[in-house]
Image (cartoon, rainbow, N blue to C red; front, side, top):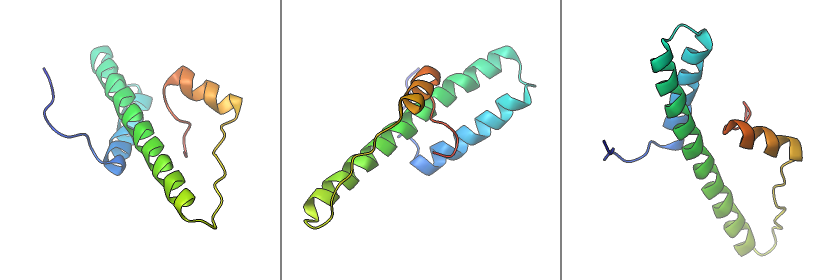
Length: 94
């Protein structure tokens, strides 16, 4: 069953993800529903990460075109990279 709707905007996806996390943290969902919510959360996380990566790329391009502005690449610490790749989600607050 393929979805024909366009992906949600970043802010909508993030809000939905926060709602899913709150429901999962309560711990009162049946297992099947919790797994479906978790799966949706992973998809939303990937969508948000892709949106942020695209935004970062756009900013880098704009900074290069600016002439005087210098670009300093974003470097994640090894700890941040390990935690996000292992869980498939970005740490809270990012």
